[in-house]
Image (cartoon, rainbow, N blue to C red; front, side, top):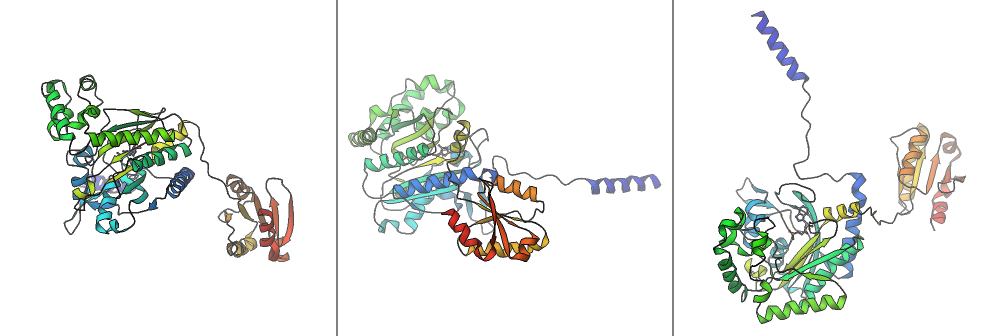
Length: 439
Ligand code: AMP
């Protein structure tokens, strides 16, 4: 009885002492820590510059959408809808999904808000997180960020296809990524694709035993995807498959030719890839992906989607768009030893010595605020050495040093951190003096 009691007590003690389990971010999802923000500032800056230059307006859509949106647009037999959606059921019984891509949401918003009544085509861009339940590996995450550009409405004009490809290409050039390759293809339209698909299914029909499981399952539901398969078993078989480009109708041929002519005119080099089909059902005609030499994974991709708006209940409306994977761009930049090109604004750093000075610090910072000058500080640190080290890390140009003596004399030391020279200035004059130096 006594022994049992001791055992029980020990058990309680050991449970009490157990350290709580350390929590981690969900698999394939990452924190972007302060030290890495400089890369994301760079991505935001390039996105906004490109969007502004090519006249795209920003658009934001909810991170959650109805499951049906992607089932109807991306397609039920695609990897995204079949395997990769993060779905949830709300307390009210709605089936929602964390947005796996941006185009379908924008198409939904276009219909829902009557954006066809605005000047056409509508040119919009976004930079948002996307979620796909994939097997995480290098360059492939479950939460990742895309910057995307879409041109919806107006005519089916090859100029718009070229402008989307150009915008994405210029984005990657602005990130200094070298050796870019654009792979491009046309997957035809409602008129020519059914005939091609019949031929494709016919070609594969007596080869099913040699195909991988995915391809065997997709042969009826989504035969185009067989051209996309990279498995060893399937690659040699697809080499002899009928080519999409040989089966385009006259209108699709003309459109594709015209897209290529625009790219030629711009001096943008591309490679024709008759096997490129992309993983989403809504594409028609032009599809493309952009690669760099450094990785077999695409940095960007997109295409035309002339049936998407209609598929979602709108009037027949053409569209074309593309998106860049920002994590992959940052990785490519890091791999090539590139640094973000962010220009540093002159930085002022306030250093305080002692409690009296600390108390005065917030007021001094406020004096600069009304003049639009940002002052950095590390008010949580007391030692001069640590504060100067922080100033150095922040690449500050000027330091304002405030000690007890200065507070009593209503002055402050202004130190030029590049030259090391310093002088004492009246607090009432310091903002003007700093402004003068920044000029
Ligand atoms: P998509 O929406 O599939 O056309 O993809 C456009 C771009 O987003 C790709 O070229 C990649 O750069 C990026 N991307 C797509 N899926 C992922 C993922 N799971 N992890 C990281 N980046 C991705």
